[in-house]
Length: 166
Length: 407
Image 1 (cartoon, rainbow over the protein chains, first blue to last red):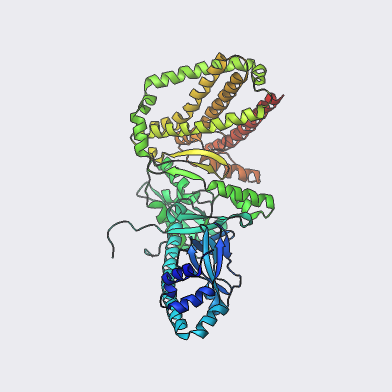
Image 2: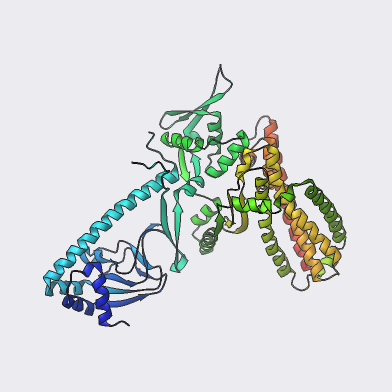
């Protein structure tokens, strides 16, 4: 069990909340739920509905997407200070990927209603939060493009397909 | 922009979930091994035609391959036609490269990728994944088959290998390995073999009494012998590697894995030996098997020198297993491409003997009898017949051994 002060100290270092003041961080900390995971445990599954986003406080998580049968492609790994699950808060669509613990991990969960409350009570904090989110989305979009290119290159190399000499 | 170095090979990270959602494993899969393990398959026979073009000037034959679906034509060399015939969906690119070297005595590293590109452009090829057994299990939805497939998958991933083993083998060779390739060692091997054979025959005449020494747990004792035997497979592979170094070639890889997910095996990649003489290839192939001859003979001598009891029975059983391994490794007629098979195809100059023989006999069994048998077809029938009889005899012999031990 961690104290509120520890949680606030952690949130201060999280990129997403760096623009928030002490009062807003305190308010946020009170609305977070602790989640613990054992190594190998699945937290969210692709296709399920969810209304929470998660912050990694300790450990490493693997984000993967189903490819075929019991095989999934690893999209990325998330470490301390990183977050995921925010897409479901905005578009209410099913989870786009599965997230599981690569080591024992602890996380903080923030649900849609609490996030909305935070924005309603402190619109300035909400705006800063959204700005930080957009920055992270852009980074992830760039990383996804790189991954698509890498996967395509893998396919070409593994099958011997060659378009350069066509 | 380029820095002149070779481009980095792409890698994929895959998460493989275990049955029942009981954890997962993350595997990094590089594109290069996926390529050499791929098994290209040509389109069905009704979708292509192959015609020979005899040159009036040169000696070389050429072939025209036509895709009957798209009316696209390809001109193939003799070597390319040879590789095309291998593309049956069961033969990996690595195996094709080996067959190519055995047939032509050299290897052009660009020929396979170039041919695959040509064939793919002409839509004459499909790419399919690995083992037939695994494909059959994957198709089978019964729980037992799924469990087996999952188990094989887990075991198949166990690969402990190194590609940087040449320095180690060179050191082993310098530190005494070279002695194995001297006349004295050859003579000692022959003498041990003869002594082992004589002693083994004597023990055989008293087999029941010797087997009785295994006591009340003969099956467990036999399993212990088998486990000990698996360890000696490492020595077998190491000697192959030393032979490769002896002839000045490079050992490319050494490791341990579960072949097809269920056969524990050590392996060594000595394909560089194909760049040397046939004598070097034969010596390299045979030398590994001789490890079993030597060990088997030593076990028989230990058994002969031991009083009746467990030690004698264990040593005698180990001797039998080692001699079996020696015979099996060098015996070419067993459908398994072991050392003896490689020597046989090298001597016959028929690198695809098993493949061709099985295809031919399969066609006969389906009712396609040829009007006249050629010499080559006779060899194919002989290979399949001898292999079938040999395997039946081997199974019967081992069953008899186990039953005798338990009686």
